[in-house]
Amino acid sequence: MIPSAFDYLAPTTLDEALSALAEAGDEGKIIAGGQSLLPVMRLRLAAPEMVIDLGRITELQGVHDDGEAIVIGAMTPHHVVASDPLVAEHAALIAKATETVADPQVRHRGTFGGAVVHADPAGDLHAPALALDAEFEIAGPGGRRTVPAAEFYVDLFTTAVGEDEILTSVRVPKTTGWGADYQKFTRVKQQWSIVGVAAAVRVEGDSIAEARIGLTNMGSTPIRASEVEQALSGCALDAAAIAAATASAGEGTNPPTDTNGDAAYRRHLAGVLTARAVSTAGGVASSGAGAA
Ligand SMILES: Cc1cc2nc3c(=O)[nH]c(=O)nc-3n(C[C@H](O)[C@H](O)[C@H](O)COP(=O)(O)OP(=O)(O)OC[C@H]3O[C@@H](n4cnc5c(N)ncnc54)[C@H](O)[C@@H]3O)c2cc1C
View 1: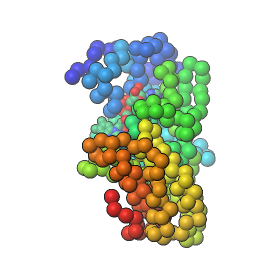
View 2: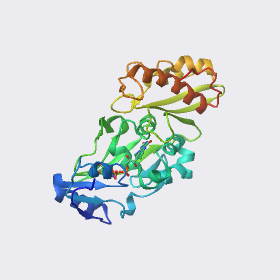
View 3: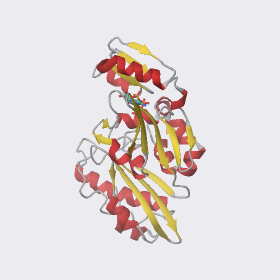
View 4: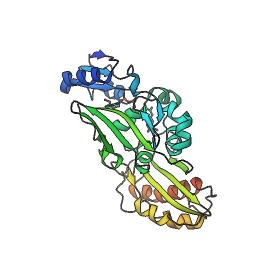
């Protein structure tokens, strides 16, 4: 289908974009890469009268190092994030998850900011952002504010970004030297995650000193597997020990049931994939990690 008619603006500064959004009110909509918004407009599930394109605002582009963290501009496309050397060195979990997003075409148009604001529960960037305690920088009519990942994801397709606000960047505290892995379970290549598990581990000697685990598509928002993180603290770098510490990853979650699998299967997958992700992140062969 063809979208309803709309006006289009491509401001070059954030202030202009915020003013345009305020002026358009309920009829205004931000467009980033358009990979999620345009299909919704074509189905006429959204019919904004004014579309405000962030593509010309240079301050929203690219990745930089601010000392304690890596800062990813909201308009940075997935393919840039996935291949950026700073992200690879200091936030490897983000790189690993971004590599799994869709196909090369979508990764060239779709943006980090667009994906996190869209907040599809099956999206692959939320669990890593949550696991790494990312902070979301948001600009609005009242100025700028920072929202921690634990408060950013509010519900299905709903984040802390208000209708009159723009996400400007995501600040990811450095996990330099940590091992990282993202396990994405799909039935066919380039599918949305049926379940995904993001794991980052800091190894000391022959055990895990610290672990961060985030779950994708195990509820309406990404989930931090805090109890598993605690169970992994001090865990030997051994496949069987890791499998025992991670088996309960899906417990207490409320994942969807659909044609790809029911909730019980997803809970089973969460345990299996967490063992695999932690084993891979820790450099351990995951032979004892169970079957999907
Ligand atoms: C075929 C296909 C397969 C896909 N597979 C996957 C997958 O496997 N894993 C995955 O994670 N994702 C997947 N995606 C989604 C992909 O990551 C998109 O890039 C993402 O959902 C939207 O990013 P975008 O930049 O295109 O945003 P847009 O579509 O432009 O915008 C999405 C929404 O966010 C709002 N928005 C965008 N940027 C901002 C901002 N800076 N501030 C405030 N609001 C903003 C828009 O108003 C809109 O509501 C897939 C998409 C397609 C089309």
